[in-house]
Length: 363
Ligand code: UD1
Ligand code: UDP
Image (cartoon, rainbow, N blue to C red; front, side, top):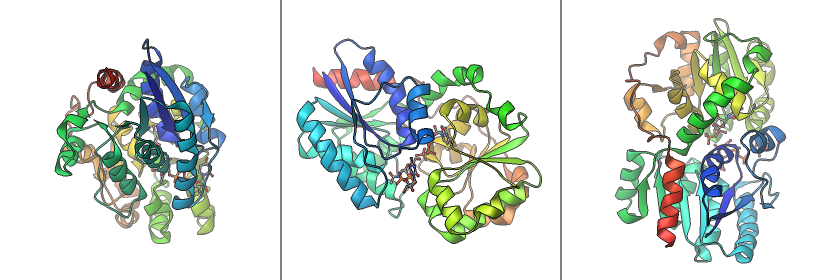
């Protein structure tokens, strides 16, 4: 059986690493890896291939950045050529980026079955580019791998036939379990940055709704700068956020009080997450990793797709204006009440369940 996997953005390298490891060790399966080139900086792409032992892509499409239509359109055209040449049994796509949608659409139009990992997540905010990508990908997919029970329910409500939907848990939980110990052994990021466990806050910001809105971005910087009076704040800067801070003249305000660093590799990121006193983020992946490592998390958004963490009390939503008002007091408002043995993301074997479902469907 031949499977074409399409990836392109940072979190997809991590998700695919968890599944590819199983795929490639299963006799009779042949994975062809396609990298769209959506992310291309060394620290947004290559570092993950090296650290996570992901094989070199069979096809690197080199699409790069662009407006949504231009970027997705170029990917669609290039992926179609790969699929025509390879004629796989399945196309496997991950998450909710433009690379996900392009992979799913190119395959569906060629009548090649599509499997979607991380299906069924919804923010119910159609202004998010990711929400459009998720909904369209789910409705183009033949097999939908849901990471949570809430995701299964969302798909049911949208009328997707139940036999196409399989609850497998979250592949990012697989990755966290597999690479968590390795990070402790290999990463020296805390020493490099002069940080002490429990003595810093880790922040990440990259969502378009926060970077592309000057007021929200200013509120976030103002909250982080105030917090930095009381505790070290480490912010690995996504290139989109660096660009936005520069554009809005906010970079100078942030440099100095905040420890701004370039994006880090996954092992360094795990260490920074595990030992933080608090995580402040608008990332989907980082919200869950905070829970995996049992670190309290504040999410700088109005809503989240990972609602179970809010219900559990592990994650607290805090829109940027509220965060600016809270500033340093944010350290004291978060009170985690979740039972530490809750497992809303499965058992850490999502990769195994995905591969066995693909095999079963193809027999
Ligand atoms: C994308 C995904 C988002 C995901 C995020 C993970 C879409 C619509 N968005 O957002 O869902 O959470 O990846 O990080 O697919 N840039 C660089 N170097 C790079 C990559 C990007 O400089 O290697 C800059 C470019 O200026 C680019 C901007 O970042 O225009 C945004 O990149 P893009 O891939 O379009 O969106 P992300 O914000 O990364
Ligand atoms: N991540 C990383 N280095 C960083 C920032 C994030 O390795 O500097 C990892 C993080 O641990 C998580 C994933 O990237 O596994 C999340 O990606 P991102 O926040 O870019 O996207 P999202 O999950 O919001 O789609």
